[in-house]
Amino acid sequence: MFDYATFTTRNIGFVTPQEQEALRGATVFVCGTGGMGGACILGLVRAGVGRLIIADLDAFEVSNLNRQVFCFMDTVDCHKAEATAAIARTINPEVEIEVYHADWTDHVDDLISRSVIVVNGTDDLGASLLLYRRARALGRAVVDAYASPLPSVYVTTPDAVPHEVRMGYPTVGTAWDQITDSQRSEAFLKESEWVVIHSSSRHYIDLDIVGEVVSGKRSRMSFAPMVITTGQLMCYEVINAALGRPHGTDNRGYFFNPYAARVERPRPALIAAMMRPLVRRFLSRLMG
Image (cartoon, rainbow, N blue to C red; front, side, top):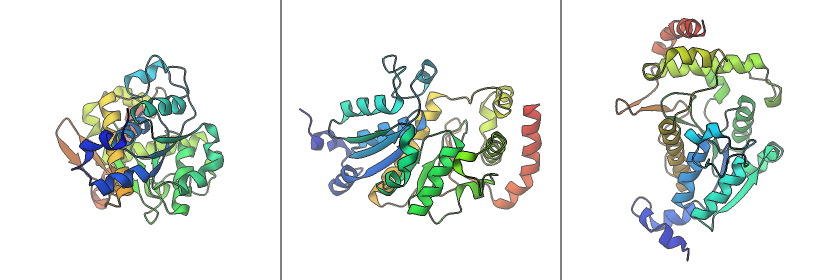
């Protein structure tokens, strides 16, 4: 017989009994339930978060098996959010989960306003901008991660510089559902520049394959330890928000380097500016 107190008894010590009840009463919106989003959801469910709103557009496929924690052979071809909710309820039968498909965009203000924080687990630029813009307007923070070979996490609060402005995306003033292919490509290049400037990611991957990814010739690489670790870093920031604790990072975030056992934080602005032309040439050569 399931009992919430027994289920969460070993949490006590990391959180107080009162904080555990706060987690039980918290609502979190996770948009994208595949790689990082799914790993974050897994941590939240096992931590005892009581209410989740989850959304996804896609079904699980065989290529997701290498990293997505709710993808199994018996969930391949199942809608990601529906399958995720079903499995989550086998962990905590009392968890309340609302599931959305493509219709989440029609309800975005309601979903955000009912949540203590938003987790961006989608890899679509337009959907991400919608989340960021509406979360800012509604006074909610967004937890996200870079498209990086190293685990990363950052938290953009409503009073921080808007994400697309900070990253230098060419999307400011463009409706989220009117983003062009050229804008998507330039935004991805801007994010790639940030990752190369502020982390040692390039030392741990095949750069020839990276060039194919950046030029759009190949799908983005994903590796289970990196994806799942990222999701867990995101989970910690959600728990901080639910418990009213300070966040462990800001809107610039950090990278966790498991190869060298260190945290890599953003470089000072002056050094980053000096490196940027060199990094752009480096990425141009990769795209070749």
